[in-house]
Image 1 (cartoon, chains in turn orange, cyan):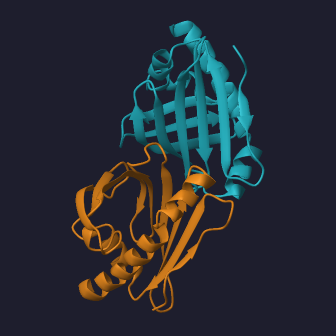
Image 2 (tube, chains in turn cyan, brown; image 1 turned 30 degrees about the vertical axis):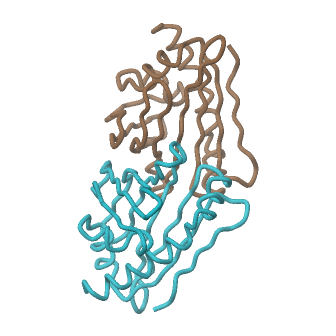
Image 3 (cartoon, one colour; image 1 turned 90 degrees about the vertical axis):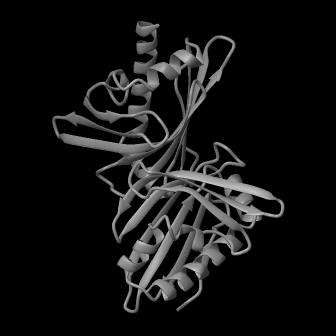
Length: 156
Length: 156
């Protein structure tokens, strides 16, 4: 299993994340779309997570809260496309920066030995993308991808 | 009343539209969020429009179809933010290019003499934005804004 690749081309509002997992697209899709498992992989390990809602269907909404010793960080969004075993397209907003909404597209591509997860995030400006990177987005993404790999090994 | 300004900075996935109207933010919001009025202003005049669904609330979805002599063009999306008299944030997809989803943010800003509508569209790539411009997006936007001004004059 390879590590997580994160590309953040300078001067663009894009973040591209790629990771391969030892699973089928169907296994990976099942795990990432399960509201009962979300708290086990989304976000950095050192944050406690409460999932208020995670309704993975077109028009379904989600909201979750991360907590550490400094406070709470709430995130919310809505699902645009949910295509079983293939792709999920959703909005994403940190409530600390209201109105700075991001569009996220996650695709599940079969490979010879497993599945390649590709996630593109498109921010509303280059500045808001750069700020999310400064806030530690890459650290959170790497931790999420590692936790997802562990969850796959556990859930099968 | 001024005309419509459209900015499409080269090498970016952004389209920025600005237009001032002789209305209050509340009047403009009421018209653009009314499903029964959508067919009277969205899109170019020469296309017939059928609105299947237009449910303006967070998590609400919409779908409409434009028709001309050459065929049908269906569009769909979901609302992320609906803040009365202030802003609407939604996704937008032409079903002819599935998966190429765009994020749109519309804000209503009071001015001395009326309201300034600002709409930002963020595409998933510079290429898909450029293609939408080639398909005549600007023409459709200008017609929509002119039709909206006419509807304001009629509805009050």
